[in-house]
Image (tube, rainbow, N blue to C red):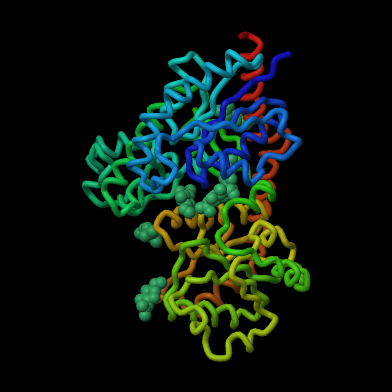
Length: 460
Ligand SMILES: *[C@@H]1O[C@H](CO)[C@@H](O)[C@H](O)[C@H]1NC(C)=O
Ligand SMILES: *[C@@H]1O[C@H](CO)[C@@H](O)[C@H](O)[C@H]1NC(C)=O
Ligand SMILES: *[C@@H]1O[C@H](CO)[C@@H](O)[C@H](O)[C@H]1NC(C)=O
Ligand SMILES: *[C@@H]1O[C@H](CO)[C@@H](O)[C@H](O)[C@H]1NC(C)=O
Ligand SMILES: *[C@@H]1O[C@H](CO)[C@@H](O)[C@H](O)[C@H]1NC(C)=O
Ligand SMILES: CC(=O)N[C@H]1CO[C@H](CO)[C@@H](O)[C@@H]1O
């Protein structure tokens, strides 16, 4: 019997390619044939990283089409990349599909395109092929994109996505608010040309999503009940966390320090404060030292990721005699294998910048959080953690904007002193992990989607 055959098309940025590969591998595990369509540049990256193991090779085929730019041209120039993609890729994709349908006994059943690749959905519609869009991040972040027309109608942004007035935006009571128009996903760029180019991609994506049979998202009813209830057309099948194999490959810029795990093995269960702020957070000397001393005063073991460049004066930034004083109770590393650390039984809580990846990795391991957001959009995740899931606390700043040592010590004590945070975190972990297991809501949704493809395959 013919197998369903899906063409999976990621947005051509590494942060998009690897997650959607995760989805492709799940489909392969369900016996679906996948042709994974990269741009030529990313194709080389993916094949040289050997992300596809022998087990999945029969069902997974990696192919490439050009993005229209010369190899040496700057793909971080979003305006140029977007224009080039729109000019070149639709025609190349059409040719690819024609070739596959001529040569392969398994004709293309359906395409799944990243929502940033709206043009691909239009190509599929034109060719009479079934379509699904995919959104890799939170539904809250999607909601704001889906609301772009309302924001224009209300006079908050202009037709190019550029803010006209600066104000708080609350799309719904059940979702975290955006405090200002500068926190919209497309307004975070400095250069207006890039804002416009990104907004164009957003608009295309929303238009294209209305041409699909399914809009798949990487979340679950258990995680975002409020946001999902606003968009019943979304099919939550996640969170599909990267398997450790993909996780290890996912483009970390700093060398991992696996001695962290050996050190964790020596600590008592549920005792360690894990502190990590992602790739971009910057600290000035005052704030850095308050954090250092706050951790020391906590009187607990801690594992602290201090990225090179996290402060302007890294080595000099520790208070006098600090490293000697904390001795082996505190372990400071430049990068840690985060997924493995978070899963380690010695870890008690996570002091985090609350990026969505880190947030979900902490949730998936049942950890309570202390939220230390840095970028505007990370405050949303703090709202989820603090107010919606109730699995953590935020820090209050003092009158000059510093989170003091006393504040840090006291929030650590409060978080670890009340069992409710740990219990609630374990409860959410259980709900979220069971949603992707057999019988769970996300698992059922994915099975329904695959069943729909099987029926289509039989009909054709
Ligand atoms: C989130 O995780 C995915 C998969 O591991 C990765 O490709 C992506 O770059 C990560 N995003 C950030 C902001 O680190
Ligand atoms: C947004 O506003 C609320 C209420 O005024 C405040 O508690 C929160 O800290 C603000 N967040 C940001 C990112 O400014
Ligand atoms: C969480 O923070 C990330 C930035 O790390 C942002 O892109 C995402 O939209 C936030 N999640 C929510 C639910 O707002
Ligand atoms: C789903 O989201 C998680 C957390 O951000 C990320 O690590 C993972 O790669 C995403 N998976 C897909 C298939 O997008
Ligand atoms: C250090 O950064 C904090 C914000 O994190 C700010 O409020 C404070 O004024 C800064 N202090 C100095 C000395 O620059
Ligand atoms: C869009 C869709 O079909 N969502 C379903 C996902 O799974 C839950 C639980 O089974 C259903 O309630 C949703 O309707």
